[in-house]
Length: 310
Image (cartoon, rainbow, N blue to C red; front, side, top):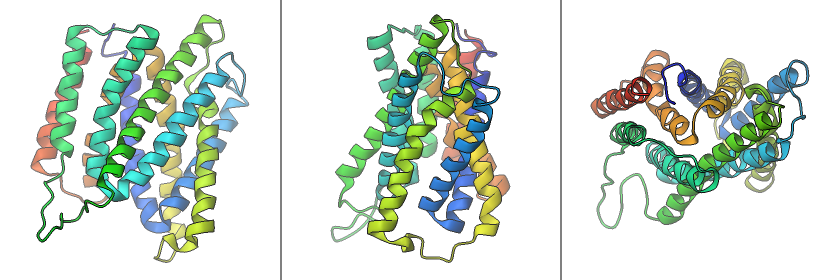
C-alpha cells in the first residue's frame, strides 16, 4: 500500500541524492572527477563503518552475500558505465536514459523474480513521473554541418548509449537485489537497518572505484585534471557529497526499499535531477529552463498522486 508516509524515505533519498549531485559538481571542479569520486567513497565507507560496527549490524546478517552482489552491480558496474557514458552523451541525456530506463527494468525484474505487482493507478503515476523527467531533462537536438553533430559526436555514440543502458540496468538490478536481501533478513528474524545495508553494499563500490582510480593514474597519468588541484575549497563539498549521497542518501534508499516495491522507489528517486534545479539555483546561481520547470511540476504531480491515491 502506497501512502504519503510510506513515501517519506524515498523522498528523503531523492533530496539527499540531489544535494550530493550539486556537491559533487563543485568538488569535481576543484580536484577532478577521479579524485573526487575516490575520496568521496572512502569517506562514506568510513562514516558508515563507524556506525555499522558500533550501533549497526556490521558485517552480520543472513543476506550479506546478496548485499555485496547488489553493491557490485549497483555501485561497481552502474557507476563505471555511468562514468564512461557521461563524457560521450552529456549529463542531460545520460541522466534521462539512466533514470527512465532503470524504472521499467526494475519493475519487470521484480515482477518476474519476486512476483511483485503494482496496481494500475501506481503504474499510471509512475508514468506521469517519468514523463516529467523526460520533459525536464530532454536535451536540445544535435545540430551541425558537413557531417558534424554539434557538441556530441556520432563517434562512439552507439557504444555510449549501450553504456547508459548498462548503467540503468545496474541501478535497477542493484536495487532489486538489495530489496531481496532486506526481505530475506526480515524473514530470518534478523532485520538489517538501512545504514548497515549501505555499509555492506558499499564495499564492492570501494573496490571498483579504487581499481578505476589506480588504472587512471597508471595508464592515463595523474594529469587527467589539467587545472591545479584546489584541496582547501574542495574539502567541504567532498564532505557534503560523502554524507548526503553514499552515506545518508543510500541509507534512506535502503529504508525505502524495505517499505515499497522497487519500481515505486526508483520512480520517486528519478526526480533527483529535478530536485537539483532549485539547489543549483541557490548554490551556483544557475537559472532553470522553462522545460525543466514544466517537467518538474508534472513529475512532482505524479509523486503527489502516487502518495495520495494509495
